[in-house]
Length: 359
Image (cartoon, rainbow, N blue to C red; front, side, top):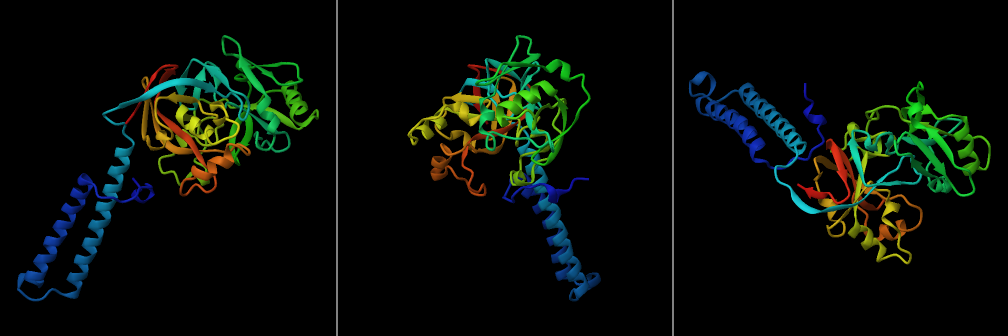
């Protein structure tokens, strides 16, 4: 059974749904008039209190049913891609971030899976660094040196090499991790399946980030589908669903920003920051600054995305301080917005130079 009340939509007039509810209400209204005109049993007397209460109840039920049908139809309509698309620009850069909060791997194309961008076993936010004590992940916000860890992959996308200042490179056999039984870790207090990547890389990360031999571990997400529900703080975004949560992502498995939006912010900064600092997967050239705020549906190649949430910015200091002056959005607190977070609705592949359409 469909729980109409659980569909988070706002009531507005809509021809189809209103037509249904008005028809229901009109039938009740006719009954109401007949009772008023004919009275009890069609004798011409006045209607009884019971009859009037029955009519009132009927009107209430019809209104509730009509509103529920409206909400359901509107919800269904919002889940369907549009029939018409409009060209807005083209893809100018693509990035995959294998390890949460670490460096990006620039690519010329990637496949769009339900857990995020991927090329073989090079996948977005598929690894994360966690505390040995409790399995909770760490980020560059609490451990800034984490962003200096730079992953790279071999040509088969099966082995990942980590580099960082002052450290010898270390390699992780990603393919071999798929043969290991998973344990568990935690992303924003939500449990996830996680394969431990071993003692050698754990010691390497601990030495670089903590200057100690122990304390941190690297874990890998081994599944092909998202498993986490929408976080409590993100439930205000009605279109965001559990299928958008990706592998080890904060909110969604895809993020897009435009060159013009990055350039607009840079005109207000003493020291410009590169587009890569916004940690998007897709950079688009062509649209005007922050035009992507209003896109509902996006198509690149055969891949279709839904704009499910504005991307709130969390870098330290700049450009955060400048963004707060003009990029705050109602209901999102003190976190300014640049770019958008997307859920994939039709899987496919995208590449540099592909045309970007919106609907």
